[in-house]
Image (cartoon, rainbow, N blue to C red):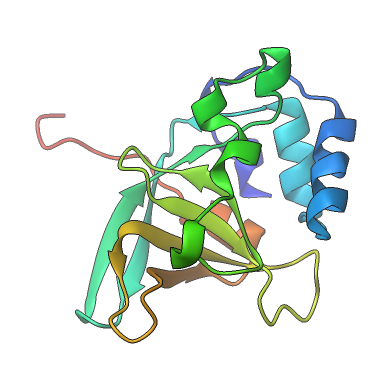
Length: 165
């Protein structure tokens, strides 16, 4: 898994796998094995490789986003409420069923496991969902495919390079 070679800038430490498995049961999902392993050891992690690219077919361009992991356990003081995975699943009428947000960016957009039409439940594809841009036909938040699975998503992560570096 590519996360083994990525430096952790900060995290909230370890989290009991029971919190993660409770979330799975409550949402009737299975997280990818490597995601569970990582998040249990690095709850709410911020990485040194915080960026990924994705293709926007409507504009026919490639865009990029930053990324950080949401964590588990705001009730126990492990992560801030705003960065708790539990508090980032309500998309009102503008979201989709069967999306599970596991990360975010600084602008409040969502990085999600997509369990819609998922043939192998523990290997959902990864999508990027804009929190403030909506499809005219469905009035739902716009989504972009990012990766076929969690491991492929991790391979996309890179460290942002500033022009003055």
